[in-house]
Amino acid sequence: MSFEWFEEVDLMVKKTERDRLKALSILDLMAMKQSGEKISCLTAYDASFSQIIDRAGVDIMLVGDSLGMVVQGKKTTVSVSIDEMVYHTQCVTNARSRAFIVADLPFLSYASIEIATQNAAKLMQSADAQMVKLEGAHIDIIESLVKYGVPVCGHLGLLPQSINQLGAYKIQGKSSKDAKKILEDAKKIEQAGASLLVLECIPAELAAEVTKQLKIPVIGIGAGVDCDGQVLVLYDMLGISMRKVPKFCKNFMETAIDVSEAVQQFHKAVKQSEFPAIKHSF
Ligand code: KIV
Image (cartoon, rainbow, N blue to C red; front, side, top):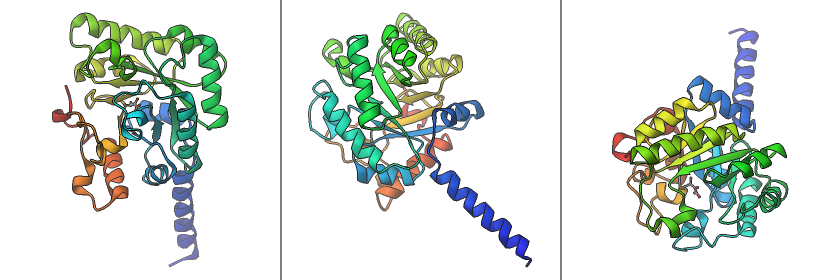
């Protein structure tokens, strides 16, 4: 065998390693949408899990305010503070090399443009988040954050921070009026400059329509298989959650020997459009 052959293999190995370690940016997520590559996303709250998720190749880590429920044992996400979000985001970013980091702005931390700007600064400057997520169609807030250079992820459908208004965690957008509103809000959020959108607990057909009409990537949770990507709460997909696991979730530990393998299986299943299946959709 010639030296050239070895050199070629060596270069290929180095390129694969470089690609594995290259930190993902907003442009990579857009490229995935455009090429039809599914985007995998898991929530993360600490450094140890962050390292496992990152090494498995998962594209996005969301430091979700779901930490109030799965880490702190609260009944809702309402009590989570911005300082707690900053702390957990720091833990996650400390151990990350490749995955794109989105951090939640918690309940009432974006109640005005001024408050939202100050809190987005905390997540991005003190904790290295690459994007902030906020629930609902708060167009003026999104426009203002984007104007100051803050990448924003919208969140529509079931809005857990509004649980005290909703009364129960249940599927949204079932009536044609509600579905139309979600589609219109999604378009407004995109026009306001958001770069990503999470759709939670809505009919698969509606999520498919939103995904088709938007240019930005749409990440679903309980929103069927046709979104550009999928997110799950880490503790739910590892089967260690204290709460009743929703129908759209799958316990990947059932077929894995350890946490790393479960996370790798989730990543692969999303990339190959094997998760979610029809039984996980509404
Ligand atoms: O807080 C969170 O974990 C979330 C996901 C459910 C999308 O917002």
